[in-house]
Image (cartoon, rainbow, N blue to C red; front, side, top):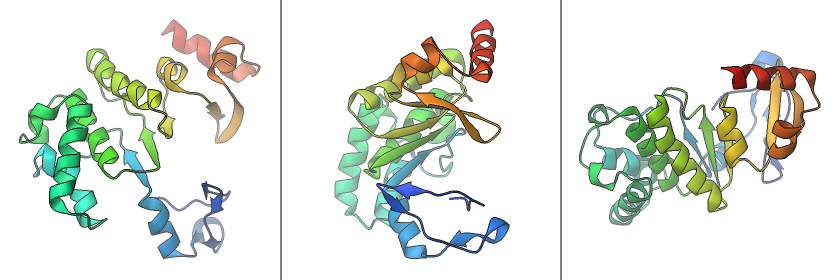
Length: 203
C-alpha cells in the first residue's frame, strides 16, 4: 500500500519490480502489485470498518467487488468466518454497535474472506482494553494453530511470544535481532532487546 524508498519486497520469492529511486521510487508493474495485493489481507490497528455497512456487508465487500466472486458463495463464506471469530450473531448490526474487540474480530473475518495466502496485522490489539484484547488474541492464536501465514507488527511481547514461530526485533528501522521466540525472549543477545524486554515486563 506504501511505496518504499529502498530495500526489496519479495512475495513467495518473487521480487516486486521498481522504477526510480529514493522518494521517486514507484512499482514498475502495476499489474504485478495488484496481483500480489489480492493474495494478501490487512488487519488495521483502528479496525477501518465501513460505518455505513453492516458487519456482513463489510466482510463481503472486497471478495465481491475486487475479486468478482459470486455473491451467494461469498455470503456463505462470510457468515462462516464471522462464526469462526465468534460474532456470527452480529451479521446485521453496524460497526458502531459493536465493542472494539468485536470490531477487530469483524476486521479479521473481513481479511479472511479474501482467502489470502498471508495475513498482515498492524498492532491488532493496541487500540483495545485488556479484557477485549484477549478476545482478539484468542482468534489470532487459533489462526496460528491452523498454520496460517501471518506477519504481525506489535509492541505486545506476550502476543509475539505466544503466537510466533519467528520474531524480528527492529530498532531505528534496522533488524537488531531475529530468531525463534524462545531465543529472543529467553536469551536475547542484543543489549537493546534486553533493555526493551525489561522495560515492557516492568510495565
